[in-house]
Length: 67
Image 1 (tube, rainbow, N blue to C red):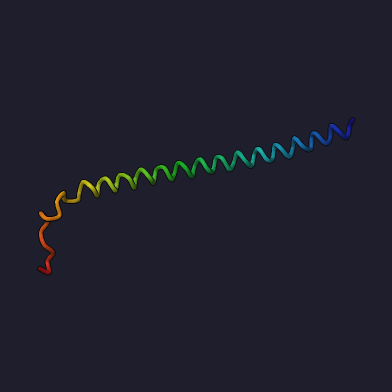
Image 2 (cartoon, one colour):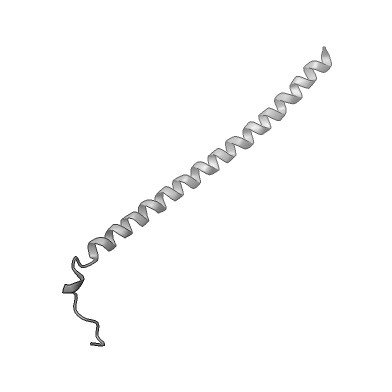
């Protein structure tokens, strides 16, 4: 009976280690997702700004200086 309890305690210790490691990985993944989301929002804003700054009709743009 004593060896069985000891075996269960060892299993619980390994599971605790595994759970701690998985929790750290989930936390790191959550931070990475938050960073990527912020970068995506910034890039989306830049693209929208480029669209607003671009002329609507290329025919109305002045010719390049070499003409």
